[in-house]
Length: 206
Length: 245
Image (cartoon, rainbow over all chains, first blue to last red):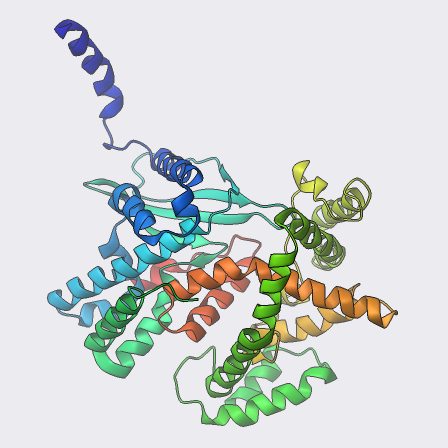
C-alpha cells in the first residue's frame, strides 16, 4: 500500500510542480478557476437568488488567492500611488480589495448560464505579463469579450486587471480616485472607500 | 470658448437637430469646474444625468419591471432577438461604410437567416450557426474615418455620448427601420417595447455598477468612453495601459 502511495505521489509530482510555475500556464489557471466557480454557481440556488454572504465565501476561497490586489490598487491610483505613505497604501489596498470583491460577487449572482468560450492562448517563453481572452456568448447579442491580465509573481500567476468589452475594471477607477484625491487628499479617498464599503454592508439596496 | 473650437475641429459633421442641445450645453457648461479634459461640460452633464436617472427611476424602470414580470424569459429573449435582427440591417450598412465588406455580408446573411429560419427574427438562428453578431453604428463609422471624440455630453433620455457619437445617433435614428414605420400606433408600440426590452437587459449591469461605483456619474462616463474607444477599433485598440506605471 505504501509503495502504491509513493508511486502515486511520484506520478503526480511532475504535473503538480512543473519547472516553470506552481500553477502551470496562466490560461489553464483562468480556465480552471472559471469552470470551478461557475460550476458551483450553477448548482447553488442560494447564490443564484443573491445570497451575498454565501457568494462572498466562494469568492474569498476560490477567486481571491489568484488576484494581486496591491498591483490593482497601484494601477488604479496611477500617479497618486507614490504620494501615499506605506500605511495609506495598505489602507487603500484593503479597501479597494473589499470593493472589488463585492463587485465581483455581485456579478456572479447575476450570472445567467451564459456560455463561456476560452480563446486560443499562446505565449512565448519567459513572458511575465499576459492577457487571457474569454468570450461570453448570449443569444441576440454580440458576444462579450472578458479578458484577464495576469502577471507572473514568485507566488505564481496573478490577475491584476479584468477587461469587460474593452472596459478595464481597474482603469475605470482612475478618474474617480484622482478626483477624490484632488478633493480631500489620499485620506479623503480612503474615507470615501470606507464609507462606500460600509454602506454596502447594510440591507440589500434596490 | 475652448469648447466651441474643439467641436469645430473634431466633429465637422453638421446636423441641425442637435444644434440647440449643443448650444444649451455650451452655455450651461460654463459653470463646470472640474479638470477632466474629456468632459468640459461636466456641470451641465451632471444635471442632465440627474434628470435622466430621475426619469428612469420614476417611469422607465418601474414599467420595465412590469414588462419583466408579465413576459417570461423565453418570450423576452424573442423580443430582444427581434429588435437585434432589425439592428443588424444598419450594422451591415455601417460595416459597408467602413469598407468592411466581408463583415457587411456576414450581417446581411444574419438578417436573411434570422428573418426566415428565425421566424421574423424572434430566434437568433444565425448565432447558433456560428454567424457572429457585430456591433456598429454611425458614431463608430465616423470614428473609423478619423473623426475625434469631442467633448462628452449627456443627452436627455439617450444618456452620455461623445459629441461625435451624438451626431452618429442622429444618423442612427434617421435610418432606424422602426422609427421609419409610417403607421404611428405600430411605430410607437414597437419603440416603447424596444426601450423596455433594452432596459430589462440592463438590470444586472445596474446592480453591479451600484456595487462598484464611488461616483456613478464618473464611473459610467469612464466605462462608456473606454467601451466606445474599444468598439471603434473593433476590440483591438492600440495599447495605452503602460502610461500609468
